[in-house]
Image (cartoon, rainbow, N blue to C red; front, top):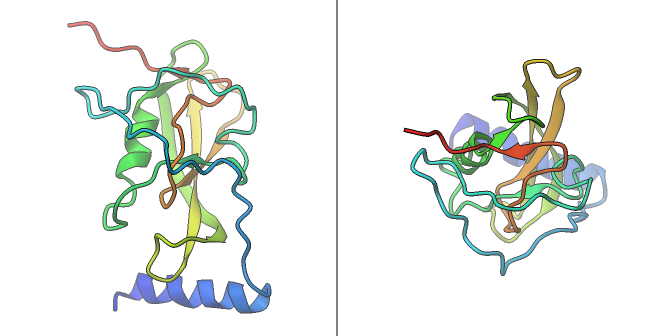
Length: 155
């Protein structure tokens, strides 16, 4: 067993024991959500801005970017982030900060998953934003309020 898998399992078990179990507080899971389309640059096609100001910014309303296996767990996060721009179309810069917020899921070998937290900013932004991603569940993909969909490059 790989070291990081063992540590993940150990941490999850400790959380479950110490907290009396973990509860699923995620409110925007939608197994009937359509599979997102890809652009030529391998980013997602995003056509709608969320009307929920918590979408993406709150652990209870993460960006649910289900991926069939966790062997390449960041691919859909990158596809999503590459499809975003700042409020006025600015190029976004992002980095993964941590994993947090354990929750139960049937789509994980150990029965639990974590949200990934990304820091996002653009030139001129006053403070970075934090976006929460869930790779285990599906949901409708939308642009979080305050951001925009990246415009396609003209040839």
